[in-house]
Structures are given as structure tokens and as C-alpha cells.
Image 1 (tube, rainbow, N blue to C red):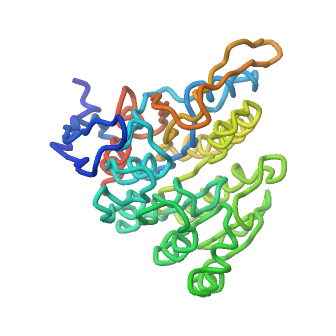
Image 2 (image 1 turned 180 degrees about the vertical axis):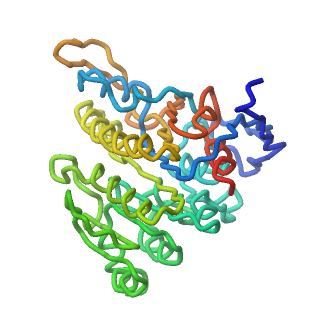
Image 3 (image 1 turned 90 degrees about the vertical axis):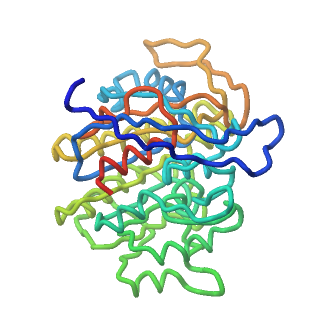
Amino acid sequence: MNKLYLFAFCLIFQFSCSAPPLSGEGQRITYEKVVLVSEAKPKNVILLIGDGMGLTHVTAGSIVKKTPLALENFRHIGLVKTYSTKLITDSAAGATAMATGKKTYNGAISMDIHQEKLKTILEYAEDNNWLTGVVTTSTVTHATPACFYGHQPTRSNVNRALAAEFLTKDIEVLMGGGWNYFKDGPDGRDLIEEAVAKGYFVTDTIVEGDQYLPERMICLISPMLPPRLAERGDFLPLATKKSIDILSHNNSSFFLVGESAQIDWGGHENKSDYIVEEMLDFDRSIQIALDFAKKDGNTLVVVTADHETGGYSINQGDLKDGSIETGFTTDYHTASMVPVFAYGPGAESFAGIMDNTEIFYKLKYLMNL
């Protein structure tokens, strides 16, 4: 066996599905995990999540763009199983699996099936003095980003609770939508004022070329959910770059989670143009992360999804003019495996077919947490 590899046995980690199985769902009681990981250890990790991004979403972006996607520079590629305690996961359970290494019920924000808190990869990073950041094109309190710092038994009606929970952490960067949830926090609290008092530079805009690098930054670009690309502009690429600049400027190790949330929304609405515009926006952000990783030489970039949305298919099209004719089987999520792409030290660990919980264990091992 190549000495660059070793088998790290997360021996016999279990999750119990003792909660009542939902309709048509059998119980999975225990299973073993054998996680193939590299000996290479990255100094920094950038985890980018295309919410709802399946293989067809990537393919559509590639055809419409007509030139190679940034994703096509990745050489270590795998497939991820996404089921929760149900065959069809939601974003909360899917993100919880990646953030904590545990399966849970749909709607849980980093809580197990007994509604006990699960420690996240970001919290492990914070405990080990890594700088951390979260970026999203949704609200910062939406299911996927929230699962990396929050703990709630349900994803519903907890935006203000999650905003308050964020301020109990030591996360350096937070960017996305949701100003109102901070300004009008739980019990009448003004969490914007509290954040400023805690040392955050708080803003509602991000500007290309801005050289100011605060030690801590919160950027909330919309009162609640951010708008589509035409209105929000290059927020995700700019936020990705700004976050990397802030987290890397003092040469500390950092862990950044970025989410392209609205790929999922295009799938739910069965709008192919929406999916494609979000895929291409996501790809620009991936390119920024990849450029940094290539220059830095010590950064692992992992790109994946929490689930596939829409049962999206390409039925006709033309490579020359970048046109596609598409179809959908559902306006919800599917059980299809999703891709994972990796670049940098430890990227070999993400080749092959894996469970979404393995994302956590691979990262935790590679980050020496």
C-alpha cells in the first residue's frame, strides 16, 4: 500500500435510530466506518457546500458556461450518500451529518435523535485555536450554515435563537443574510450592538477591493433571505475572498465553511435558469478558494452538497451555444448520491463512495482535532 495512505478506523461508531421510523422507513441500528485518510495534514481547510447540488447541476453549469468549471481542476472526486434517519434527508440533517459525523432526524440543527447537542467540526476547530468563518447566500441562521455553530431541536422559527447562539461562539467571520434576526434579537436584545461590543466590525455591504481587514467581521446583506443573483451581485465570490483574506492574514490555521444556498431554491422551484446562475456564481467562489489553495500550498479545499434537489435532468441541448432542455421529477430533495471534490493536502481521502458522516471524520483527522 502507498505509504501516503493509512486506514484510520473510526471503529465501530454507532448511531441509533431508536426514534420511531417514519413512513416506509426501516431502521438502521449500527454500522462500521473504515475511513481512508491521507498522512498529509493541511494547515487550512475550506469546505464549500452547494446546497441541493447533484451531478446534473454541475453538468448544467458546465454546458451553459461553455468553458471548464473551476470544479474541473479537481482530481480527487467521490460520491456521497445523503440519507438521514429517513431515506430523503433535509438540509438540517444533511449538514448535521457533515458537521458532526452523526445521522439525525430531519430538521435537527446539530442535535442527535435524543435531542442532545452534537459537537461540530467548527467547534472542534475553535477549541484548537483555528480561526473560523461561515459564509452563505441564505440567512446565516438557515439550516446548513447554522449546523456548524448552532444546536436547536428544530430548524423552524429559531432564527433569533440561532443569532443569539452565534454570539456565544468565537467565530471570526459571519457573512450572509438575516440582519433583522440580529437587530431584533430574542427578548428584545440588539445583537448588532452586542456584536460590536464583542469586537466585530458589522456591516450590511461588501465591496470589491476593500482592503480593510478587521480581526472579526459580520456582514449581513439583507433583512432576511438574500435576493437572487441579479440583485445581490457578486456577494458570494466577494465574501469568500474577504473571509479568506481575514482568516489568513496573520498566518494562523483557519477553517471556512461556505454555502451556495440558492442552488437548492432553484431546484425546489424547478427553474433550470435559477440553478445554472447559482452554479456559475458558486463556481466563481470555488475558483477563488482554489486560487488561494494553489498559491498557499497548505490548504485543503473540499466541495460537496448536502443532498440533490429536484430530480434534475438534462434531456436535450447544444454544446455549441450552451443551451439545455431540462426536466424535474420532484420539487423536493431526492436520495441520489452527490459529488465531492477535493484539492490540496489530504485530498486523496475524498476519492470513492462514502457516507456524509465521513466528511466530518476525515476532516477531523486531517485537521488533527
